[in-house]
Length: 106
Ligand code: FES
Image (cartoon, rainbow, N blue to C red; front, side, top):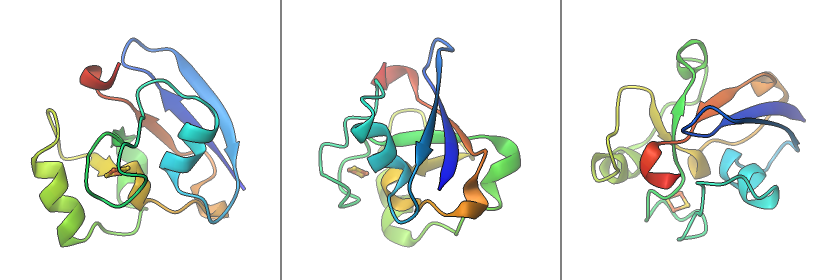
């Protein structure tokens, strides 16, 4: 279980307890967090789960693979802290993780 903070583009934040084994995207969808629609259901094929990971957390995450990077290249305004939230598995070590949702997904 990890407490994850999802921050909407305009700054509204949602602190959610997400069970281990779910993805950060699933935690958002199950709790109706605005801006993460996850159109492909987590297949790394849509980028509607794009988030900006809080800087201090970015290097603690498992590295992204090539498929994720390819999809991020097509995402709206990716930056060096961009990840697809469907590719981040929740575990106890991620307790406190914060992610921001891009403006296009508002
Ligand atoms: S849900 Fe489609 S890429 Fe993450």
